Amino acid sequence: MAQRLITMTSDFGASDHFVGTMKGVILSINPEAKIVDICNSVHSFDILDGALTIAQAYRYFPSDTVHMVIVDPGVGTNRRPLLVTADKHMFLAPDNGVLSLVYEREERLSVRHITAEHYFLQPMSHTFHGRDLFSAVAGWLSKGVEVAKFGEEVTDFVRFAAPKPKPVNDTLMKGVVLKSDKFGNLITNFTPKEVPQLFEPSPPTFKILVGKTEVTRMRDTYSGGAAGEVFGVLGSMGYLEIAVNRGSAAKTIGADKGSDVGVLFEAAAAAPAAT
Image (cartoon, rainbow, N blue to C red; front, side):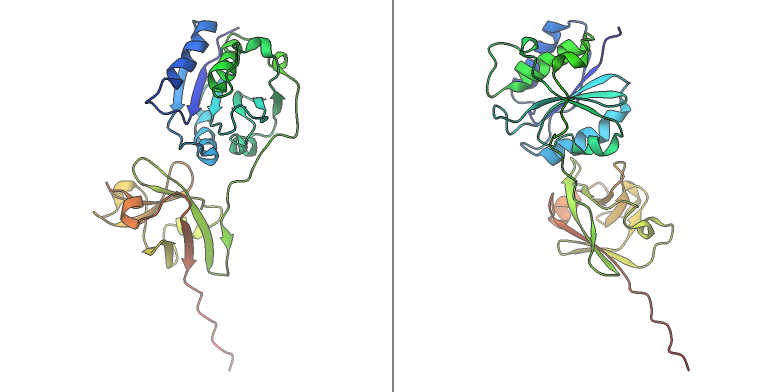
């Protein structure tokens, strides 16, 4: 069987030994393993940020890739370690909802509680399952060990729905900033599905309300705005983003993850009264 590629998504960062140690465990089990970092800078303990990160990336990897998603504030507790098999990909993650957006995108899933302790490193730390459990299982999976050997299927796994925009009235819809990226772009939870008219070539008069700022222009690209202009753009994640050309919208507006966002359209003019 061909070697399975392994990816890593975590909140471990780059200033400690954690990520390098996990790779060492994998390579000690399978020296031929290929490991790709998706992102090890997920916000600490931020399960939604981890869910957004893996959901955006996993489909661009080859079939049969093993994705490790370790954002695990409940490490060492009774939360379960999971092995999830979708049509083309596998996932290793704690049962805390970090795969919720993957669950939304995949029609067929097999979710297993990993219980086969003979595949773990021993003794197993209560604070570093990324090393002793998930990396060890990833190493064995990369060598082609059958998924059924790691544990039984479960159906009561944890999942959550990402926050969705909600209409307030006929002209106003309220949403939220999901995250601020490295460039300071504010990724909202609005998509063309909720506000299709915002993304038309000639949208109706609108205001995007973020903090105390009113955004009144949409652009096709980040460089399409004038210097210092705050504008909306449809980003590669598929969400409405608030951006500044070569600047940080987060700093300019003073907004961040969790900030309220409103999309307000001008009310249609009333029809003239019949005479």
